[in-house]
Length: 94
Image (tube, rainbow, N blue to C red; front, side, top):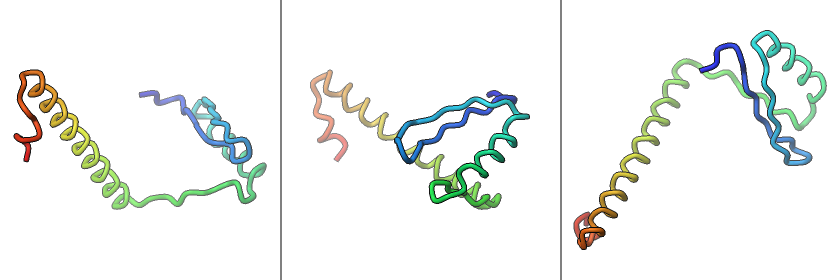
């Protein structure tokens, strides 16, 4: 992981264009200070800082979502393998 470079991504509300910008650590605060002065109208949305407890809950949700995806992938892979050997996967998983 890069510790000195930040990659920013955002969508321009007017054009729908996806914008990207790479900043070094020292440029980050300066960049956001300029953006705040230029675009402080209705197009700028600020996000509240999350507490440690909120971050922990979000982490658990992400982990659960990842586990569900992995389980689904494994079941689909097993079903495909059973079809290759001429077995009906649906009847086995019901």
